[in-house]
Image (cartoon, rainbow, N blue to C red; front, top):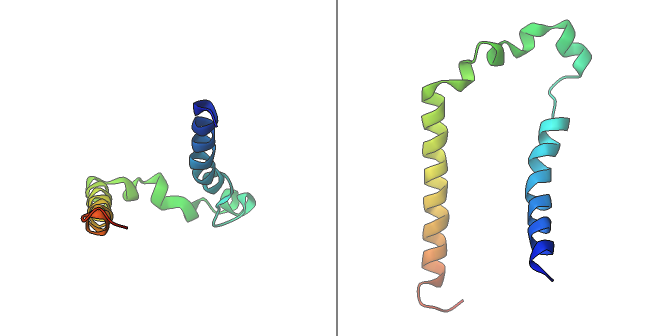
Length: 81
């Protein structure tokens, strides 16, 4: 395999899941959302995009990265599988 094949493979398989979720993941059909705009009041008022929410998500990501790194380190620390 050449390097371009690997790059395209990685781009495709890392980009399509978030795109698919963003396009097709809906809590309600479009007709219901148009008829009842109060359903998405939380996103209109930006309540979920506060500085507190940002730091909570950043901390969660840091914890997950630390756990995964420590597991990988402990697994391969002796140079054996």
